[in-house]
Image: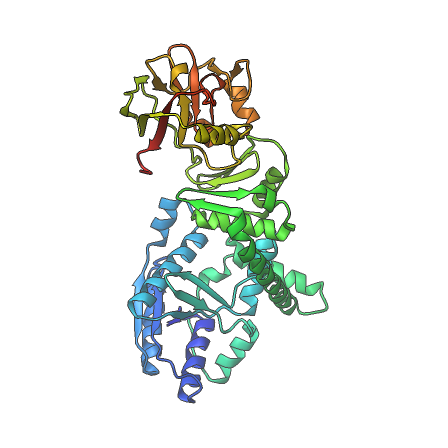
Length: 463
């Protein structure tokens, strides 16, 4: 599919592709698409009519699509330039899918690429942004945009059109320097060229190619690292900082960018400063640091984890319910959780093995324990389950004195999202289990245990 606006560049693309097809160099079938942004009234309608007539002269059909750029910009609080770009890409992608086209050719050329690089430099960018307009990029559902004219300048396009006496449409808004891209095109680039001996457009084109080659190498390294460093789920991505911190800075930046992409966080509102702050947060050995990002996204550090999330939070806080007495044996529903209690006779070999496995176990060394065993004779019925309360204390496994729950969770490096979901099982005098972290010394199983109480807590969404 050829994206044809009617301007000089896309008109040259239309005729060049048609010539290549006529000569038998290109054998693909082509369809043309035109997007009417409805920003210039009758002029925009005349552009559409020109494209239809020019394509018909070459025996090609045109699919036109109108988009409400002003309404989209208003609803999404975007500039007209950004809204037009997003609407245009969406419209072209929709037309391509409806026409069974997997490639969309646009008429971006070297000068467009130079302007894009300068635009990004003025707002802050990294090596990825310096790659400019990519020769090939897949947007969604297998539709790939290709830019076959990135190897030619605007001057060469004009020479091509004039040599063939081809007409094209002129957009008068392209001369309005209140738009940043027009300012770069008409003011900044010419000023730079006056002070440079080499062609600025060619120099920036070479920079873009070098940056893209470097970015390809970075991406290969990220592909290798991603499975061991990232954990993804709906609404959040967690990066393991122990692995993350061993990577060079460009790889760190791309790991962050890929994480945000997984969350559908748009990149156009993110600048190099955002990435610098995230990298700095990852490097500070301080738990609880947090950075807000545009669009309602956030990043925070929890011990050896960097958590990137959408809607500003990933905490699934347990609904606070009144304490509930456990049925023993039997099952008890507490909020979103199901507590199953069973009684069993003790077996000495199993008790010795169990005691060895519990000794010195720290949170995070293995799986969070959903099933625990207790010495039933040390438990004073009834047992209840409840949420956390101010001033909670318990005697953790391996110690003899009480410890405040807050200090205990901090010492065990329990992440913030887990702290918010902690449950407490207690008898008439003490807490016997801080779920899913640790059991109490006061109810642990020993070789002298004669009857075991088995408790299992299951989140009903996971069952």
